[in-house]
Length: 71
Image (cartoon, rainbow, N blue to C red; front, side, top):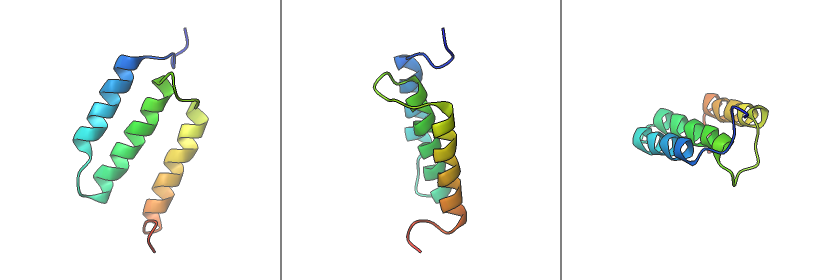
């Protein structure tokens, strides 16, 4: 059994937490996006791996650091 086998309960929990922390601030939106992306590891309908998620999260952080998408 892999650490990332499909786990619908874990997906639901991570996405619920993401929804709870998402707010108006860019930081809360950023954390929610990261949590949602991590939940994809456990979603049977998603085809992803830890490296892809790491790169995606790194991109989210880089965009934030550079002032966002609307520069």
